[in-house]
Amino acid sequence: MLFAFGSNSSGQLGIGHRDDVSVPTLCIIPPSRTEDGSCKKDEVACITAGGNHTLVQRDSGVLYGAGDNTDGRCHLIPSHKAEYPSSSPNLSNLTTFEYSTSMVKRCAATWEASAIITTRESATVILTCGAGNRGELGQGFNKTNSNGFEIVSNHMNTTPIDIAGGMSHFAAVMSNGDVYGWGSGRKGQIGEPKADCWSPRKIEGIPFRAVRVVCGRDFTYIVGSPDRGEHLILGSDKFFVRSAAPTTIPTWNSIGASWGGIYVLLESGALLSWGRNDHGQLPPRSLPELDQIAVGSEHVIALSKTGKVLAWGWGEHGNCGSLITPNNDVTGCWNEIQVQGRVLSVGAGCATSWIDVEE
Image (cartoon, rainbow, N blue to C red; front, side, top):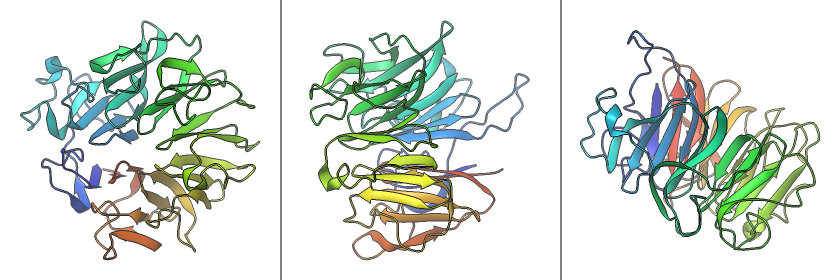
């Protein structure tokens, strides 16, 4: 069962209305079904969010979308509406999750666009949809809108294994360790030259084999294998996100980025972070050992090794829970978010938070 809380003006929480909520609320999402039509267990594999839309990918590869779909960023297929009925009458503003596509291996989003890694004609490719005036779609010069998923225009010759989106740029890691970027690039977030790019281009000069990537508002964070701890930050140094970085990050377990900060969960359960902290975004002291982190635009949701859900940072839309200070921050401490059942995973987006609970 998927629960959500936080910003919801476009229905991006998928809970049946468009009001913000500060307590975990059950999402309305079609159940996965077997060939005989019966429901099957299908846990959440990935949650990613743009400014006003959310993508939820199941373990089976099925993708659902909720929120603003005026420009096709949720990629709804009308022919599937009968198969996946919903209470949402308007395909432009979805207050419940709707079927989008299947065979998805990874998904990502910018403010108004979506991207997936999927299989097409026996090849693993990247598709994008939605809108973007800075090249976010990667579908060629001046292509600013795509109502359905279309392949990015540059053939990268190797298999994509990871993808991430910032405010207005994407970055993808390939199976050979190369990284490609497209979209907004004027701060150097997709390498040199510092310019917007309408098709994916290889980011040159990475001195190691990349395995993961995450994106902030105007930067890209690339990491190599955990045993070596190599990492690289491209783009803006606002909030000292580049200059305050440690030399290495050995034994990392997972990584995340807010609009202005970087978070590295170590195998030990400790959380290393640096960058913006004007709303308490950086972790409070005495955090328990963590099993998972999910980093939103300016807040963090974490799952402790004892199964507790913790939240801190900028919580003006209720995305850090109901217990906040007068200035909407959870700073120097954390909220423990109460939810019934065993928590499987957590997610975070643009002032939105998610908890997947075992049924």
